[in-house]
Each structure stands twice: as structure tokens, then as C-alpha cells.
Amino acid sequence: MVFSSYIFLFGFLPFALGLYYLTPRRARNLWLTLVSYVFYGWTNPAFMALMFVSTLIDYVAGLIVSGQWRRSAWNQPVATLEPGTPRTAVQRAGVVLSIVSNLALLGFFKYFNFAVDSWNALMRALGWSSALIETTLRVVLPLGISFYTFQSMSYTIDVYRGHARAIRNFVDFACYVAMFPQLVAGPIIRFSEVARQLVERRETLEKFARGVAFFSLGLAKKVLLANPCGKIADVVFTAGGGTTLDAWYGVVAYAFQIYFDFSGYSDMAIGLGLMLGFVFAKNFDMPYRSTSITEFWRRWHISLSSWLRDYLYIPLGGNRRGTLRTGINLAIVMLLGGLWHGAAWTFVVWGAWHGIWLMVERWNGKRSLYHRAPRPAQVALTFLIVNVGWVLFRAPDFPSALTILRVLAGGAPSSAAARIVDGVIYSPFYLGTWLLAAWITWGAPTTWDWTRRLTPTRVVVVLVLLLISVAVLSTQAYNPFIYFIF
Image 1 (cartoon, rainbow, N blue to C red):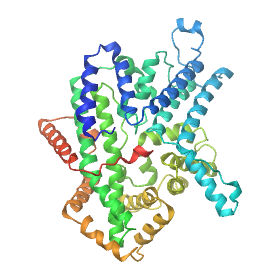
Image 2 (spheres, rainbow, N blue to C red; image 1 turned 120 degrees about the vertical axis):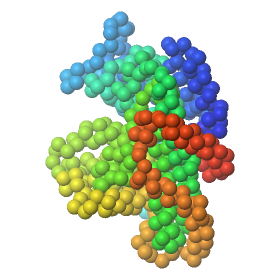
Image 3 (cartoon, rainbow, N blue to C red; image 1 turned 60 degrees about the horizontal axis):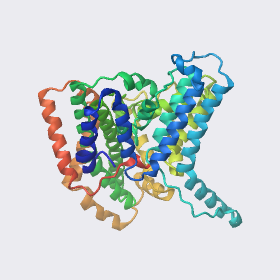
Image 4 (cartoon, rainbow, N blue to C red; image 1 turned 180 degrees about the horizontal axis):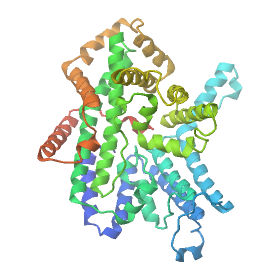
């Protein structure tokens, strides 16, 4: 089930919100947990069991780390561990249990097929057919596993570090992990960000109204901008790039698609959270206005970037062990970040592409190589680098990516037939949508800022966009969501 569907908009959401507000306050977390499991298991009920196992393991691990696993401790208030003080072997075992179990679940379900296929491809290249792994097992990727395993694991790590207090109430913890607004595609919510809200949040009319505005604008981003831009990108990538102009038009369309698709989903998630009384952190901050790749990663998918920084980059040593080690740490983080996005070597190379630029900028004092250029030129060059990376991210394989890159660089059109696509992608509707997406990307305020004050005029704009989005949704056969596959 996706947010941009009629069954969610007119079935699930009214039912979930209606009963949520009819439920006594002390039981609202239980209702939210139950309805979130229904949302998650809508496509495949077996996924619910997997998420419950992950939740239970991290709940128990948190109790072990905090010392609450002893029955005698349940009569005492839960205390936050002192940061920097030595931890016992039992506490270390608790955090290891959490990390190993979550990474094992993520590794098996997301990377089993990839590992087998990569091994077999290598053995065939070496001529070692006897070493091939013959298996009929194909593992289905559970929705959102990359998000909720990271989220659940960060809880135990934060308890271990003394950055959060362990939680005794299993329902509250299950609600934190399973909350449907951010369950399948983030943002990745830290437990410390919502710990107090889980037990004493306030649902207000002001929050609800802003939540409706957030959701409506996010839906409009998805339906009115991301989907049409995605259609342009699909035609161009399927045609192998077409002419150089077609290729650039299509690649930038994909940049708009993935941005409005994911930031739109994040807006909808934040809006749904506000309707339920929760305040989630910003996940996008106009990333295509960045003047360097370092700045881009401070603005793009902020919850993942900060997660990788706090739970991987800093533990590896961050920038505290010299220039060479800093570069190695950045490379490791971005390679793993690329692999987190998808089980394919194209994602790894995409991560390496960004890692190289981050290393260069770190060695250059966190400045881009073009930092002396005027700001518009810095933004344009950063956007260019990001778009080259998006080719690797979008292409199904390396040959397809190299074909697109060759055409982008001015190479001959991939085929004469590719020019037929011009009649589709340059129609007034698609070209107008592409130009509108460009204007919003570089000229409009963020959803976060625009919804701070809902004037009567803005309320009308929100309602009109909501009605248009719902109407257009009924005419769109093309309605993918990119980050569902991650």
C-alpha cells in the first residue's frame, strides 16, 4: 500500500485516523501499532512476522544493555547510562545481539540473491563452472527492511552510548518501530527524537492542519511532478539516451523524479505524523541548491546521512586520524551507503562516485574544487556531478549506464529509432511539467518553511492541490515509488 493510492486515501487513512481519535489516550499507541502492522502486511502478511522479530530482539537487547532484564530491576526507575563509563560484558553482549541480528536480517533478505548472482558471474568469468552455486531459492525483499532495521538498531546503540533511556513498555517500542507514516521509506527516526512524544504527545488542531498541508503538498509533488518526470526518464533510458539533448533532458527529469518522489513521500510521512501528534525532523532541505557534494549530503535524505555519520563514520574514526584515514572512512561509508540503496554493483559505483568527491572536498578543506566560482556556477556544477551519479543509480546495468554517459558527453545517438521518443517527451504537458519542476527546485520555498504559517490563501492553495492531485491520480497508470525497492 502506498500513500498515493485511493485505497490509502479513502480507506485506510480515514479508518486509522478516525479510530485513533476515538481510542482512549492510553491505548492510542496500541491502536497505532496494530494498524501499522496491517499497513505493512497489506501486500505480504509474512512481512509482519519479520518486523516483529526484529522489534522483539531490539527490545530485549535494550533491556539487557540498560540492566532491566533482571526482574529486580523492574521495581526501579529506568536510568540513562552514563556516557563514557565502562560497560559490562553483558551490556556489550546486548548491543552486539542487536547489531548482528539486524545486519543478519538485512544481509540475508536484501543481499542473498545479489551475493549468489555475483559469485556465479565471477566463477563463469574464471571458467570455474564447478564452483557455481546452484539454488532455486530466490529471496523476496521485505518492504522497508533497510529503514526499520537501521531505526530499531539505532535505539539499542543509543541506549548503550547513554544517549537514550531504555523503554520498558513493549507496545510503545513496537509503535516506534512500526509507525506507518515512516515505516517503509523513512525518514529514519531516532528513538531520542520521539521518546517523549511516545508517552506524552499532544494532538492539536494546529498540528493536524499543518499535517494536512504537509501531506497535500507531498502528494502533489509525487503525482503532479515526480510521476510525469519519471515517464520522461523512463522513455529516455529505455531508448538508450537518444540524442545528447534527449539524454540530458531525461537524466535531469530523473533527478527531478527521485527528488520529488522521495521528498514528497517524506512530506507525506511528516504530515501524517503531525496528524497523529508526532513531530518528525526535516529529511530534505533543497539539496539541488547545494554548492558542493559535501553540502548536498547535508541536505539530501538527512536522516540517512546523519545515521551513517553517527553510527558508521564517527565510530570508524571520522576525521580524527589524519587525512588518509579520513579519506578511507569516507570511502567505506559511501560504498556501504551505495550498497544500502540497492543490491547491485551500479549502486556501489554510485556510492564510490560520491565518495571520491567527498574525499577530494575533505582534502580541500570541505570546499569544492570550483568554490571560487560564482554561487550559481557552483550550484550548477554540483548538480552536474549529482546527475552523472544518477545515471549509475537509474541504469539497470553498467552497459546501459555507459551508453547514456557516452551520449551525454556528445557521442552519437544510441540508435536512429531513439529519435522517435521526441514526440512524446517534448509534448507541451511533459515539457511544461519539467520546467515547473525546475522552477520549484530552485525558486520555491521548502514545504517545511511554507507551512509554518497557514494563511487563508495558503489553505486554499493546499486544498486545490489536494483536489487536483486526487483527480489526476485517477488518470495515471504510471505511479511507481522509487524507494520502495530499497
